[in-house]
Image (cartoon, rainbow, N blue to C red; front, side, top):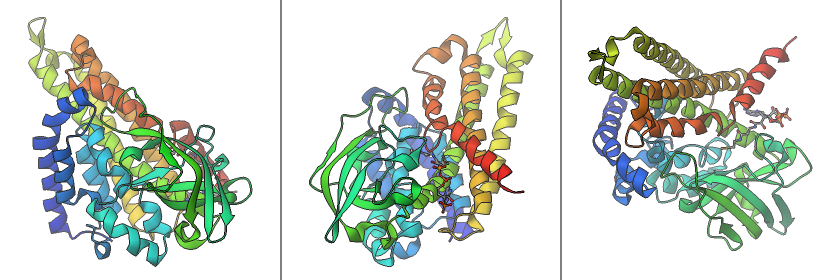
Amino acid sequence: MALDNESFDILLATVQRFVRERLIPAENHLEEHDEVPPAIVDEMKAMGLFGLTVPEEYGGIGLSVAQEVKVNFELGRTAPAFRSVFGTNIGIGSQGILMDGTPEQKAQYLPRVASGELVMSFALTEPDAGSDAASLKTTARPDGDHYVLNGTKRYITNAPRAGAFTLMARTGGPGAAGVSAFIVPADLPGITLGKKDRKMGQRGTMTCDVILENVRVPAANIIGGVAGRGFKTAMKVLDRGRLNISAVACGIAQRVLDESVRYARERRQFGKPLADFQLIQAMLADSQAELRAGWALVQDVARRFDAKPPHVSDPEVSMLVSCAKLFCTEMAGRVADRGVQVHGGAGYINEYPVERFYRDVRLLRLYEGASQIQQIVIARELTRHD
Ligand code: COS
C-alpha cells in the first residue's frame, strides 16, 4: 500500500506549507489556551490528515510507512499537540482494526476514521500496568453475546475527543495470552472520563483516565473476532507507532536545530555572532550529525516495515523499530538540551520555542515504551539465537 509518488510529493508540500503558514503561527495560542483552535481541526479534516494511513478502499489516503514517516517528520517541526489531534486516529487508535480486524469491522469503522468523523484512541496503560503491559487488570467477563468490562485505563491520549477506543482487557487467564483487544464505543453506559491530566509539556494534547464500570460490549467488537489475541495486536500497533514517534523526534530535532542556528547567527556577544564561536559550532554540529543519523535509521526501518505484510510481525523489524525509538527520542532530548544551551538565558524563557520543545521532547522517551523497554526488546532479539 502506498500513494503514487507524484501525489505524495504534492501532499508532502501541502503539509509543509500547512505547518509553516498555519501551525507554527498558532503555537502561541496553543501555549496560552492549552487547546488546538477548532478551525485548524476542521482544516486538518479537509486536508485528509485523519485518513493518512487508512487504505483508499475505506476512504483514506493509504500512505506506506515510508511515506508516513516523512509526513510525521514535517509535523514534528511544530508543537506536538497539532499532530496529536489526528495522530491516534491514523496511528495507534485505528491500526489494530486495520491490522487484525475482520472485514466487517474494517468496513464499519475505517471510513468514519478516515473522514475524521470518528476519533479513535488507544487504551492499554493502567494504574498498575505500564511497562508490564501484559499484567493489565481490566476484566472482560463473558455474558451471553456480550462482555462486561471493568477497570481503569490511564494517561489515555485523546480520550476526551474519542468516539471509540481500541481497548485491551483480560478475557482469559494471566499474562499476554489472556488479553483481548476490543473496539469500545465511547458513549456506552458505564464509561466515565477522569479529569484532564496537567502535564510537563505538550500543551494542547489531551490525556485522562478512562473508567469502565460494568460496560457491556458486544462480543462482535473483539478485534479479529477471536479472544486472546489482543496483546499481540497491541504490540504490532505499537511497532508502527514507535517508528512514527521516532520520525516526530527527528522533526522536532530539526526545528530546534533550525531555531538554534538562527539564534546563533543573530545573537552577538564579545563583538561577533554566537555562530562564530567554535564551542557553539560544536553543539550545532553534534546535533546535526545525530539528527541525520537518526533520520537515516528511521527511513531504513520504514522501508523494511513496508517490505513485510502489514498484519504480520517480524521480530527483526520490531527490534529495528526499537533501535529507532531508542536512538531518535534520546537524540531529540540531547538536541533540545543543546538548543537551550545555545540560546543561553533566552532558552529558559517561554516565548522562545526551544523552551517549549525542551519540555515536549521529554515525553518521547517515556510513552509507547520507555527507552528501557526499547533496550529490552533490542537485547532480547540479539540474544535470542544460539
Ligand atoms: N509483535 C507481535 N507479537 C509480539 C510482539 C510484537 N512486536 N512483541 C511481543 N509479541 C508476542 C510475543 O511473541 C509473545 O507471543 P507468544 O506467547 O505466542 O510467544 C507475546 O506477545 C508476549 O510477548 P512477551 O513474552 O515478549 O511479553 P512480555 O510480557 O515479556 O512484554 C514487553 C514484552 C516488555 C516488550 C511489552 O510488555 C512492552 O512493549 N511493554 C511496553 C508497553 C508500552 O509500550 N506501553 C505504552 C502504552 S501506549 S502509550
